[in-house]
Length: 266
DNA sequence: TTCGGACTTCAATTTACCTCA
DNA sequence: TGTGAGGTAAATTGAAGTCCG
Image 1 (cartoon, rainbow, N blue to C red):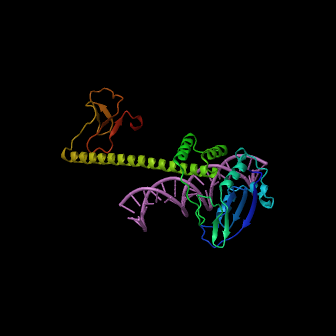
Image 2 (image 1 turned 45 degrees about the vertical axis):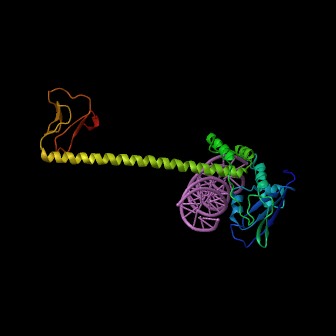
Image 3 (image 1 turned 60 degrees about the horizontal axis):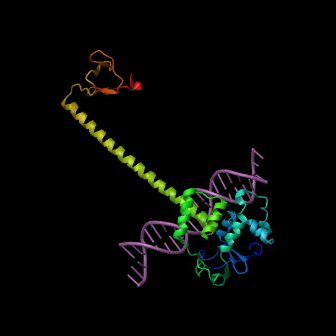
């Protein structure tokens, strides 16, 4: 399959709208394995090339006439081990689009996912494909090259499609998590607002109590109170304070004293 | 150590399709 | 029945980062 592949390169411009042409298109005629690359001013090709969607090695290696693309043979990495095959696999499923005076014409008559006017129909994954992808995503949210290829082969998709699916899936997961986080924060805000409201209410009650009853109030144990002059607490019976946190103050006191919290004892 | 190419991932955006009023 | 709005998911684009020779 690969060995018989012949790649030819043609350059062209058309007057059709950007969404219909000016797109770098790579495709194959399944019958004779002839690949035709139509380049244009589109950023798609340059982007694909920049990101190695189209492997320069493929261009340079298969067709020596594109010599400027061939200087990549020294790059050796595990994840690249199959990139050549992957690219060929990608190319096999892409389209032959020829530029005619009317614009781009789909060259594959049996092509079902390209409109007559040259735009790509949006693929809808089948339930089975989605399920397999979901299962795979549960195992690992990112794919290495081999996993991607295997999955693509299993689902009869292009590796790039699997890659894109995982990319979008990660984005959806992140978005959902953000929504959850937002909800948690919203709940926290509501709780704090309620707490603030009740504390304010309590303050108002105490203030009104102070006006109507300007005498000392003890909220802690009856034996513990605060000296109004030195603001120190003492036990009414002369005994020591216990370890529990207690509060004792008089209405109008600016400095209530907490006990059981060492850092707050003066 | 620096540089550049190859490669991946992400965020933002576009595009095609679907549903529903 | 046709249509526009809005939602969703596939696909594109460009930037940033890592790895390695």
